[in-house]
Image (cartoon, rainbow, N blue to C red):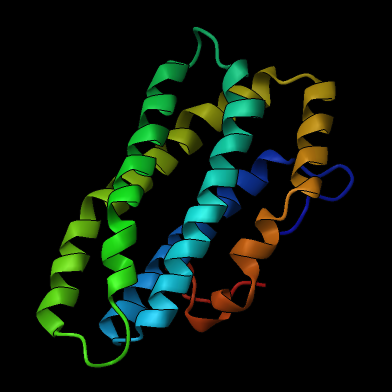
Length: 180
């Protein structure tokens, strides 16, 4: 995730972050299938940290700009954020329990199945934001708010978390290409 340069739309970073978060979750799941428990745990932990910061940025800088023109009210986004967090919390211990290459494949399949609601909710939520939240913010945010958002993006290390060494281990699930 690159920090937007001068004149760049910082809201574009949220769309790119959605793709990178999806790729990081995919990398976690691929590592599970490959029985690389340590890598799977690292990817899941990195995903959770990056997601928490991403959510904090959205709630602080974007949701306040929603108005009646928005298709969904802010409480919908907030409720989905809390549900994603709860689902991820429920998976932290099971993911941590998968380590080494001697893990029973049935346990891995069970964990992958348990993760499906989280994966689907995150995908659906990101689609909702890109269809509604980001377009509304593009129309309504003041230049001061856009500048503050750019500064916040520059000050956070979400970019490092989502584009660090773990990222290079699998292609982006949307483009099939390695991220820059």
